[in-house]
Image 1 (cartoon, helix red, strand yellow):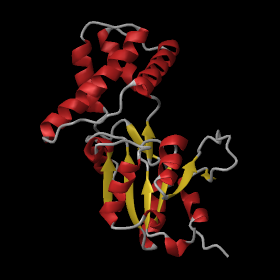
Image 2 (tube, helix red, strand yellow):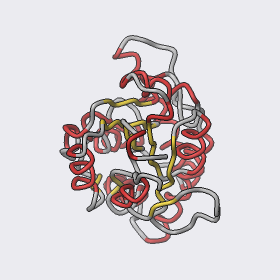
Image 3 (tube, rainbow, N blue to C red):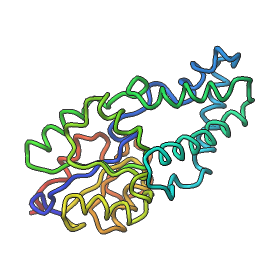
Image 4 (cartoon, rainbow, N blue to C red):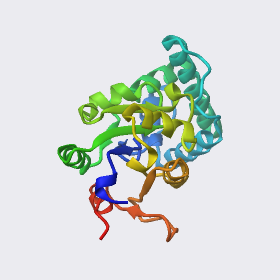
Length: 241
């Protein structure tokens, strides 16, 4: 890959551009305290594990609806099942429906998300170098409000999310839809994300260039190109001698 061959740089969202403040379990419990759920290190760990298992076991967030309100309703129900399953593993409580309304709305704002420190400067430098930028994410329509709230929206020329694309990473379909926004061929695009299967393997199987963002240094593969923070992407976008 050479710098001159890449016209678009795509990014995953959560875990790549921004993250939950603290942990999902910590935020869940802060809102659940008034419903009588104890907020302790032990319960936090159980909720985090319960959420992880429920999220992994959930069906893909693909909904056969076109009307915006129906889509939002489907997204909400999808998340209701996940949060319900997470607490079912820990212990249900009275008022769960009201609780879910609160937590769902809370995660749809920027309040419980934080941008990784190097992200704004990295995106600004890429833009100044003439790259088009896009997001490819298995997110729902709350993403647009979050991105605006985090003041990142102005960097991106395209946003491709799974609930609107009708497919999820690592499917080739969602990558192709993103490419179509920019009218480029796969080999003219680079995708950066923190999930090896969804981001790196999904991108490369769709014939894009891919790089894995491994902030924790946990990748065991010696064949996958990795960076440890987002501004290391400039070491990937270099002209081969």
